[in-house]
Image 1 (cartoon, rainbow, N blue to C red):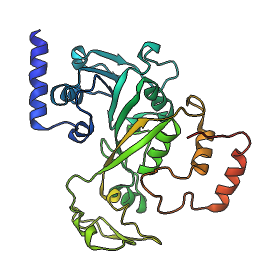
Image 2: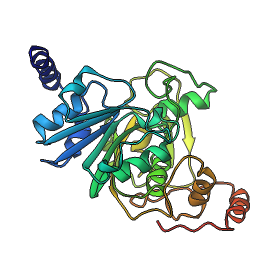
Image 3: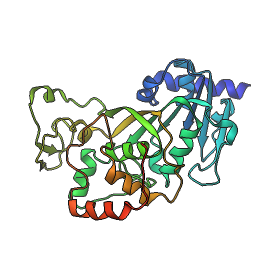
Amino acid sequence: MDEQHAMMMAIEDRIRQGNFRKDVLQLMDDDCNAVLEFGYGDGTLLFAAKLLKGAQKIYGIDVAQSEASSLFDGAWHLDLSREESELGDEWAEAFDCVISCCVIEHVYDPWAVLSKLRKYLKPDGRIIFEVPNIQCWESLYRIAVGEFPYTSGAHFDSTHIRWYTVHSFAEILEFVGFELESVLPLTFGADLSFLQHVNELKTITLPPPGVNSDAPPIIMKFPVDMKAMYPFFVAPRFIFTARRGPAPLRDRKAGYHDEFEAFRLQHSSGCRFMEKIIADPVNAAVARRLSEKFKVSIRHVL
């Protein structure tokens, strides 16, 4: 009991210091009955959900066990991307909300993981995922000058397996049966007020104005107005909220990558609340050939 009390004191101190994912917490509904965090880490966000948002029961999934999990209502320590890793049928439609912060980029098969999390959500349940943004200016800048530096954090963290943009992650969510609600670019206080005073934005400078960097500027010119997309050049991360939507054509498991490619080519938009600015893919001839390849027996209900 003394150990638990000391742990809770440490967690409350961390919450007071604001050293946890406040942006995700603010998007959660108040008084959820059951909240599941995928990749719970030290458990601070789940405890904040309980203490500040009134979550009644908290659960966590992580590959590594933390002593914080002893204070959860339930915890599983497994690699959810493995086909044999499941919580069990008794946990189907058990959770009001599933949250995750900068974890899905460490997962080899996000299609399988998100399919399982969808199954564990209640029919009106919501997911809230914070994801690193490879479209952020620093990533584009480094790639433009021929760098892809594996680091111990940030965009090029050496433990990242997947990289996402706002549209690519939206397509995966829709493919496995989620209905997108919102996307929030996390610009961490960057001043974007100048956007209110420009009619269109076809030229973008990297690093963006106001960013603390002495890197020589790179000028990017676009054939269309990029004003709506500009915050994603500044945001290191973004947050998606999505509801459990209609069932996909069949359960999404490992090995459906051809079908996902067909879905991308035939789907009208990877992000219904944000218009695609430049058609994807850019090479129309390649798109036509791939579409023909996948036409044989592919149907989509999303």
